[in-house]
Length: 113
Ligand SMILES: [Zn+2]
Image 1 (cartoon, rainbow, N blue to C red):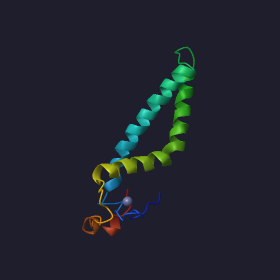
Image 2: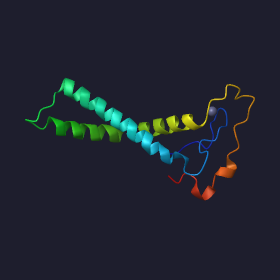
Image 3: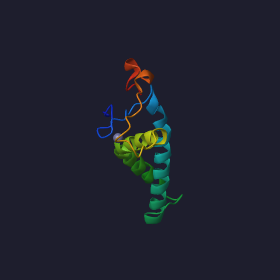
Image 4: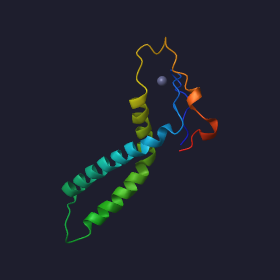
């Protein structure tokens, strides 16, 4: 759950305003839905689905455990995607300093997500 306050390479702040990462829940949700659809399709092809037995419920258990195991990775991927949509790459980042975001932050609300 720990994050660098700034990028160790270019110094870009990783939390650019209060509550910046709240939106990552939607990204994580979309990723987990896509992953669930993919595992359901794979389950259907490899193991099969039927209304005559409990294979669908076994998939639900498998998928729940898989999503719990992958949650730290999904959280990091969601945050990486989220910040990439709001902080554009600067090809001259070595010459330009990152934007100062200190006036948009509140130390009492830092990492309050
Ligand atoms: Zn960087």
